[in-house]
Image 1 (tube, one colour):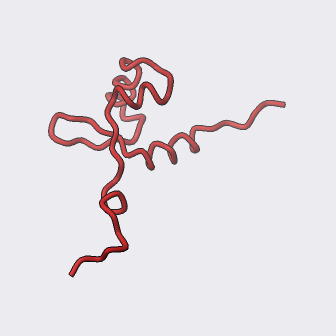
Image 2 (tube, rainbow, N blue to C red):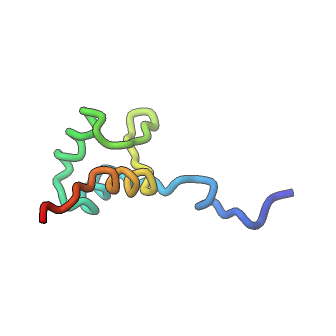
Length: 70
């Protein structure tokens, strides 16, 4: 018996690729790849592929916020 209340989106994270993350952040792909190499951004490795959990990226971005200097 399956639980009809859960959808595949509830069970699996929404994963995006390097190009999509770069586009969302408004930076170049090279910069995202550098952050990956330096392990400065949360990521998921699937073999040689790098993906990003959109929910984790949102949390990470909130942690990166700095108070405005007014």
